[in-house]
Amino acid sequence: MSTLSPTIEPTGVQAAQMTLGQYLFDCLKQEGITEIFGVPGDYNFNLLDTLEKYEGIQLISGRNELNCGYAADGYARVKGIGAFITTFGVGEMSACNAIAGAYSENVPLIHIVGSPKSMEQKAHRLLYHTLMDGDYHVFRKVYEPITAYTAMLTPENAGMEVPKAIRMAKQLKKPVYLTVALDLVMKPVVRRNGQTAEPAKTNGYSLQSAIAHARQLLEQARNVVILVDMNTLRYGLQAHVQKLAEQMNVPVASMMQGKSAFDETHPQYIGMYGGAFASGNVRSIVEGADCVIAVGLVWSDSNTAVSTAKLNPLKTVDIQPNAIKVGEAAYTDIMAEDMLNALQTIGYRQTKPIPVVSFPYDTTGGGPEQPISAAFYYPRIQRMLKENDIVIVETGTLIYGMSQIRLPKGATYIAQGGWQSVGYATPAAFGASVAAKNRRVLLFTGDGSLQFTAQEISSMLENGCRPIIFVLHNGVYTIEKYLNVKTENQKYNRIPNWKYTKLTEVFGGDAFTAEVRTNRELDEAIKQALTQNANKLCIIRAT
Image (cartoon, rainbow, N blue to C red; front, side, top):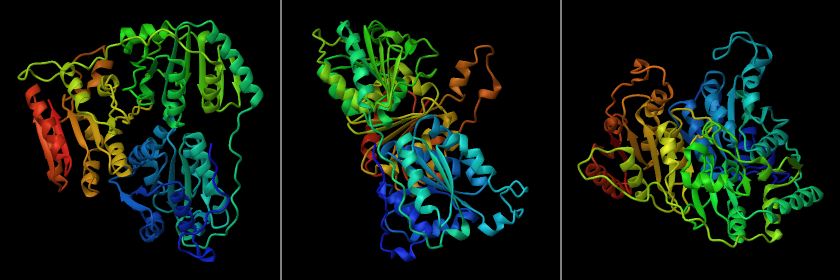
């Protein structure tokens, strides 16, 4: 893992004049952050004023703090790390759900909070946006369980705290929380060399023991499978996994939360495994293997189809970012990339060919005038995807259907497979569009989900983003309807019938829009969107 340099040189500012705010943004800029999301509030004005004058990072305004957190999350999944700014109390509390989601999904975010003046905090004054009890630590304490690190910045400690917080976010793949008082942002920062942590290293003895144990499993195995999951993505292990798979000549499957962690056009990719959610072919290959090499596995209910996945732990090599388990034996202080590289030295190579599997959406069916349905639109979606696309999928029924899509080479797939907060995908698509201006972004959402966070279509238009947005219109919270099997026709699951293709008019922008009901109309809308997307945002409402 990488470390920060001990000092961060100022950007166009003499060291003696560098303010706390400038130093903070210099640190973020060094990490490759070129945009920071935010919503203005009384206590963060000095942060935003500093950022407006700062060269190299642009402020991207969102419509509310929750959406800014989601957008920063989507941005981070594309660029590796993201940041956003809120005001004290009301702003940061609105963003809690986004931060909790990033914590659950292992996404590194820097949440910066502008707080009241330091003297007012020390005097415990009863200010607006507080709980009227004089406690200015309460909201930071709320964040402690859902972040990897929290700190209150001052000119004296910023040189230590900012690098440490960023390092924690990067190493642990979790959000961190930094708050700075309004009157301290413009104060000269006291320069101190930040403490640099040594990069995490593999214990050689532990690695040798783990490899010896893994060799015993592989020597007895005729059928080996590699299984990739979320932490393969978060810790950048894709290339290591592919190299191992090719050397071993074994099939590779992905879990739902790890989709796109392995090239799905690769001849060794066999599809998604998730217990009952997997195709029968993939399930039999994975569960029938003599040895499963699981990389970055998250044993969640959504990943395992409510525990219907069946892996024999005694036949599993479980590779986590900094620890390994072979069978029931645990080996600590081993970096995943070192284990993956060491496995190649064993010399195992499967002689029989990779199993031939069929992918659910490889064949496009349905007559032109037939009403659209899942069996018809998923194959059409798969067919329209291109290399290096960014595909963002909302939670609900879509997240399960889209998990079976076979992605093109270089595609990035974003979905909240674990946290599953309804409404996440639209702001995340905004964030991804900002992070990757030269890549095509496609958002797949339901009407109920879109109604949570539709305001960010306005932000997309304001910032020249051009995603293709598919809105699946059912008139209900479909996933909730399916999950509640005890009652029928629940009134609480119904949602208002918005005119989704008119949203861009309300938000003052230009877009290509279409409403489709038949396969012919869907095919024509997709054809038009692929052309129009070069210049404008596109919305396709499927009913």
